[in-house]
Image 1 (spheres, rainbow, N blue to C red):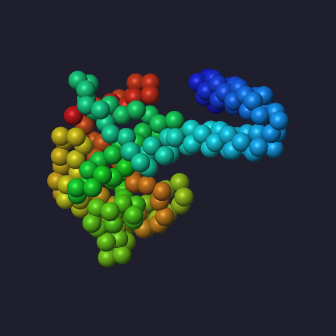
Image 2: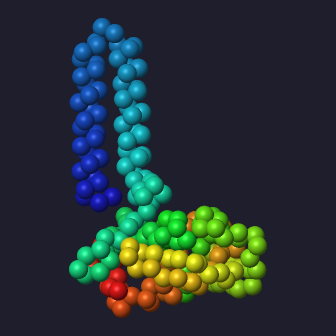
Image 3: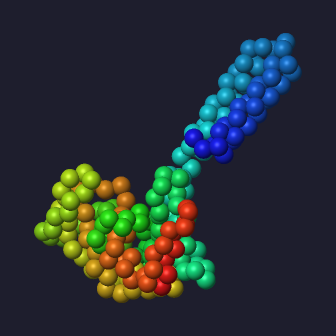
Length: 192
C-alpha cells in the first residue's frame, strides 16, 4: 500500500469514526435504530474501500487508456498494476490492449476477435505460441483497419489466441511502427 493509499484509508477510517460517534450520540435513546444505521454506514464504507481498491481494474474495463497526444508523441500512463494499457480502434470498435514488448504481434482474445467482426470458430489454429501459461494454438488473421488517434494502418497482420485470455496484447509488430518507444517514470512515450 502506497503512502497516498494509507493516507486515504486513514482519512476514511476517521470519517467513519466521526459519523459513527455522531449516530451514537444523537440517538442514544434509540440505540437499536442507531446500531442499524451504523451497520448500514459501515457497509457503505466497506463498499467504498473495495471500489477504491479495484478502481484501476474498473477503469480499464469501462474506459481503457487512450494515449494523450503531445509534442513528445503519444503518451500512455502506467496503471497501478504496473502495466501499460492502450485502447486502439480496430475495425471500427474500441479494443483495450495490454502493451506487451514480449509479444511478437497483435494477439486478440477470442472475445475481442468477435467484437471486431472475426469469427474465431472459422479460423484455422495452425500456429503455436509459448506463453506464461504454456503453449497455446493461434490463428493468423488480418485486421482491416487499426487506429491510434490519427495514426491509421490498414491490413494489419494479427493472431487470435485459441485458448483463454483475459485481454488482447499489443506486441512488437505494431509497436515497431513507432520511431522511438521510451519510458519516463510512469509514462511510456510512442514517437511516430
